[in-house]
Structure formats: structure tokens, C-alpha cells
Image (cartoon, rainbow, N blue to C red):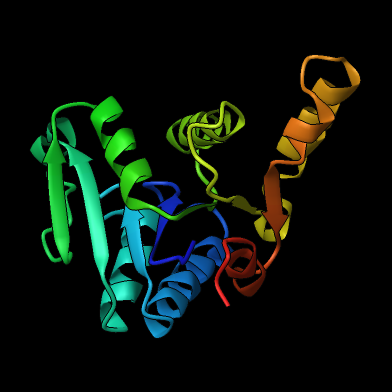
Length: 181
């Protein structure tokens, strides 16, 4: 399968360390340079906005998918290539999954975690065969990865399913794991 669009899950906040925003901007520029689209949460704030803005600055496609409740809070990015306003978070995630050929996860909180675990679960259930890549910037996800290893040791997560989550430490490595040349 050829990769045309990558879903990016990440925070609606900038984060405490500059490396997060820098990586978001590097990712957006890299996607635009490779003529790949980004499918993302549709916001103009935080790491989400940084990825989209960098894609757009590079002449690329930014496809936002945002629920009406967030549009009402005035965080929708009205300058993206496509903005899909949906009724629920469930609809948002389904549309993002449908439009994406791979999934890349930057630092984030509850929403990002929920999206990560849902899309990796869908892969485990064979609802898709698209790569799911965690970009572990500066060790941000080290404790989460350790916890997943505990889940394996405790017998609640099969090793083969633990291996489904691909881990990168650089934007280029993440794109390679997503199937981008």
C-alpha cells in the first residue's frame, strides 16, 4: 500500500519542552516535502496547530477533522486544505482512520492516549493493517513503553501484540516506520 496521508495524534498544548513543537514543525515540513497529507484533529492550537501550519507553509495538504463542540470553542483551524466538522469524537476518529494510511503519535495527554490505544486495538483486531508509530521524543513515552512491557510480563498483553506498536526517536525514523521512503 502506498502512503498518501498520515494521521498525526498529538497534544492541543505546546508542551513543556521546545523539542515537542520543533518535532511537530519538522514533521509537518517533512510531510509537505514528500507530498504527503496530514490528517489531524483540526485544531489551530498546540502541537496539532504546529504540524498543520508547517505542512501548509511547505505547500502540503492538511486535512482537519474536528467535532462541532471544539468548533464552538473557537479552536478550529480555518486555514487547512480540508476541514471536516463532525458531530462526535467517535465520528472524528472513524473518519481519521478511514483517511489515513499510517498513524504517527507525538506527545499528548488523555486524548492522544485514547486515540493511540484505539487505533492499535483496531489493528490487533485486524480492522486495519496500517502502521502505528510512536515518536518517543526525548524519552516522553519511556514510562508508557515500560508499562506495556509490564503488561506482557503480567500476561495481559501478548508479546506479538506489544510488538505492533512501532517506536521511533526521530521524525525521519518515524516516517520510515510509517512506510514512507
